[in-house]
Image 1: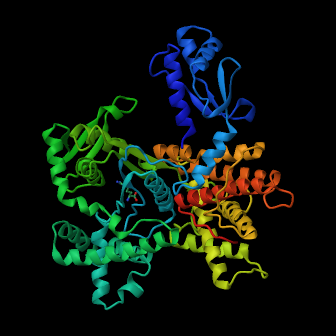
Image 2: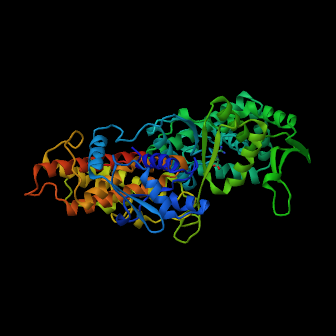
Length: 580
Ligand code: ARG
């Protein structure tokens, strides 16, 4: 259920009945304070300004035509023409009951399922995944889970960088390692960073090696069997490294979701032909270039988008054009979401403009570049190791678990050692994920172990703990939280606030899905947990003297809180535990 949506529809109808033009914005919002009601219709002011009439009178006219008797107990005009809606406790009670009996917690399926291609994680395989890939991977995965929960058809695409000049150097080095009889898994490729560094050193210093590397790239791109075999070996190992990280991170990507750069190889020449045919690409110093006036600089010089190098080689840009064509024309995507570092925004503007003109992107396909900011260290500079190196993502995650374990260490713990390990893993990984996901996607943020592992404030441990607290009530009562049912009576203000928050889950998911912003869900879950704590203080559940009706009604609220926290965290890819 989406109360906001219901009110928008009702307000639209009332505005038309009041003589306003179709399409007038009803401006429905959640109220910021209880004295302003629970929701507001603020559209009277804007409409009155346009018509040069009195906004309060117009608001009254809208109210006269507004039929909200099924959901609202009171509707009033406030200030210059706000319409405040106070929801009906009986409506909220019935809605909570219905949601608690529904697998989807009352969240309706999208009436029209979209086909959504989501390009995320997409590391370059020459090296191991580093912290720079964390954001793309987990933000993308959260949005994917939410889209699927709402019933959209999602096609995950891990656009891995497995093609390009570095691979010549890497396979030439790999060949020598094999000839020397080095054990591949255990030694040569166990640490891709070292392997890359060694290869690069030879490329820079060793006579003849760079030439061989260049020759190998050409042979690889021409489909030479020997070079392809070496390349495949390297790619396989590198993909395995990524899979380990996905597993640690509890991310849904699998091998089947890989649609790497090399997959578009056979299409690249055709992209250039089409661009030339349509007069979009032209030769410039031997290269093929698309000049884009739409992205011109201050001096009016068009933006330069190179699609083929002077030697004939293709680029990252060419591959992205082919990806547009495949996703839009072949997969018939309604939406394409791409989670990449904000520093690539010019590239994606160029890709979209060019692809639209060339017909690689259909008009019906919305192309959504979803940029994110950088993860910073305490010093406000991009996150690095103490010695200034890049931090491997796998190491960072291991450290998170170690730190969580230290923080949770308790000699009186009722849990077995193995259970404690499991809890520490969920808390540590959850903390890193929540800290990242809860930040506004586009801003940079400072990575801080102490804040993210704290049990206070908006953190994963706080939410995981809140979940266990709700579950403990059911253990105490000896009642199954998943099946408990009873009539729900909303009386206390804390019950009402909690019920309204519970009913806003769909609204939040809709926003997260349309804007590709998991932080909206993170904020919601924190508010939900906090309202639950206030409710629990004010409205005893199992205390002596509480009537059976109140107890059972409140237990339904508790159980829907537990289910919503569980589902919400699950959509963020964060695991919960029954006890902590
Ligand atoms: N491999 C690229 C990088 O690490 C990201 C690829 C993103 N997706 C795309 N279609 N270009 O920077």
